[in-house]
Length: 301
Image (cartoon, rainbow, N blue to C red; front, top):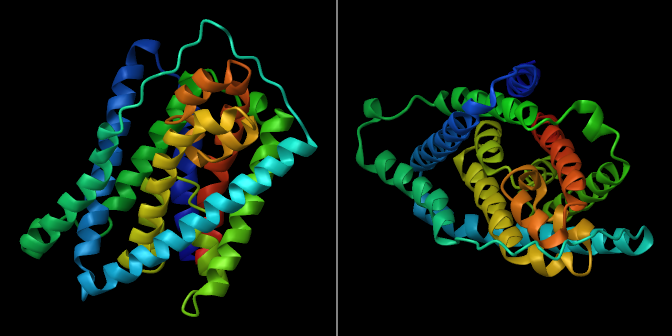
């Protein structure tokens, strides 16, 4: 019953936000609020990690889990999506006037840095100065509500994304490869159940969501595994989308996971052409809906 309640609390704000129409002039404000929500969630995750007993001993195990999970996910995502591209080819058009956008990797260091700041504050400050444990959940609801507003403000309709056949196909192949990675992760580690492996593999790059959900379902250690794994996906996507786009648009879109709808979309467009944008939007929308549903279902067992 508690997990059903959590599922409703996470999904309902997105649909409520999707129903909200705002003037274009407020889009910049929504973007800023969204970024602020993400930063606040990262701080709360760091503070939650600080509450873990024997933290530094456990961090050694966390990094091992993260590297194994990330390697499994990226390998299977790339293999499955390349096979799909080979069996069902798709040729997008790259316009000559399109230029490769410059990527600022240093800007992305803010995300892990905020987790470290939260960790430092959690260790140094008295308990009554820290955020209450449920703070992350409330901020997450605000974040998902804002995501729903963004979808609506960008002119994305449910009919438009759900009827995109190839976008749906890419999301299905991507999900299948992630689930297989979760199964293999559970097989490798004796202390990881099948459902926990499947839950951890269902973050799809949505680190602000997966970190908090896995922390609530298990503990801050596994929340940090999910967070770091999904942050690595984001960095990997930034570096390799242009390279992968040369051989497989499905793979280039898929490795971004949930970020293909927003964070990775500009580089998908610049490296793959305008024809890849509807695919990325459709794929990103589907996996953004699927991710919280699967994580909560699997983590309830």
